[in-house]
Image (cartoon, helix red, strand yellow):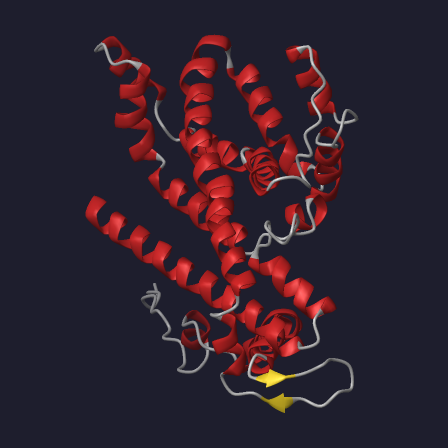
Length: 324
């Protein structure tokens, strides 16, 4: 009998099977980067070029159109910090931040906690979801529609819905010019519109964050005798702290560059008392004779937004490190 030779494993030749098993860089993969070029060009054209162009223009005097640009150095920036109208618009930003950041965030926290901890557990998730959608509805409406609706409500004399309502309650004719009267009523009206529009955003974000909280934590705390506020402070706030930072950052940036509510409701009036920096930049660019000064206002807003974003990110990073 002839014995069969033992089976031997053939070693693959270098450069064939071994190379197939070892992942290697293919020069053709660089072609994938070509697909990023359209997006990069679009971002550069829509975002980076206008920013660079605007900052450069802030150091020039320019009447617009085909007029020549004359180098101004720091004249526009020096004039900006002595401009009473700009300083007034900058002061109004504090009120805008209250209306778009502080009040909606605080109310959003309370409403989201109530919907999740009370309404959701006692009346079911469907009612909780319905109420959440109701609060978010103003976010879906175009700002122009919301502004027109509020203008109709706040009409002066006895034509406005609010004045008619107050007249029915008090029994006497109420004719308050909410938008064109005193500064306090005009700015308060704009703030109410901002709060109404903005409040749904934090409610939705916080309720989404609360979905990762184990409901048994609330039940255990309730069995231990903790009331709603104690559960809110011990469970809700620590669990959704990252989302609170996100909401505070995004709404602050939106508040710093707010434009539409002022444009639709008051046009900056009465007597420019409801000016905000972005609306002031718009007015200077459209009606002003020096477009370089309008660019200076817009550049100042951009710098302020960047500074605020950096501060928020650093504060959030430090808080996460402490928790870790």
